[in-house]
Image 1 (cartoon, one colour):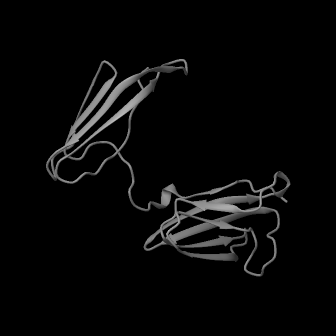
Image 2: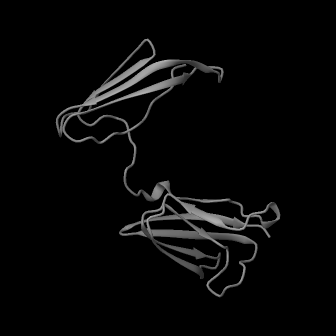
Length: 163
């Protein structure tokens, strides 16, 4: 079984990328390494690139190629952990990761009441929350929802607290 490579590069004018890679073979083992992945892009606005696979090498060339690496904030990449949050396992904070430099996080209980608002405006890609409400009290065990807003983009997620 040949692994599927799904990346997205948006490159300006003429660019080339060569990555050295190993691979996976069916049965879950590691295939011998040494194959190359080569991506060449030339011309802005060119059509979708072409792909060629031979002897363990993958070559992609052309305009915009089917290989995605997000270079900007995308709400779908945001995540919170540990979930579930369990102080009995030594958890002291919930970390929200993959954030933009400015973001607003709101935590809601099941009744829809906003119990915590967190404003982020630094260059870190994460923020850690001590799992306390706006009133300074520890949040009770239960399911909570969060929304992250950055500009016109937003994401909603779920966290669970088990005390």
